[in-house]
Image (cartoon, rainbow, N blue to C red; front, side, top):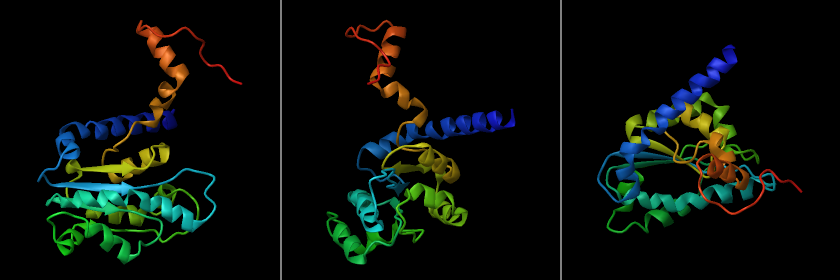
Length: 203
């Protein structure tokens, strides 16, 4: 009973955090001068990755988000398993139009667990409470912050709960509804016209 209650409390808290995305949407969807903190955790859950170097390369694919720093009051926290080379950071900051790179650099934070294993980055963070607290300390206002994951699993959901900020992504509990069978189920329940077929067919 207590485990179910804890799970229910977590779901309620996550829903509460997700509701914070509604007033944040204006700041997320367009260039603005609103204060905000973007926490980027490009965690990968892919078993085919077999080296830390490949994992790091995947995690750095979201570095284009550094261009959000052209917004003068935006702070960006970009987490990777290992430290990003300074020359790579300089390259992206030099792309910012009308922004002095050194000014943008003051609003960029690059915490890392310094863990080159091939495990998902979110796992590395969840097992390091002090690092999570450090990231939390970099968030100026939790009501003006959101988590940007690469994909959304229960790991990223738990990380959002630990950080106390909403996740820019779908709640994993809704994933079954995004399948063909899940869509057919919803269409049938809501009397939405849809092509003839069968649900839950497995080869």
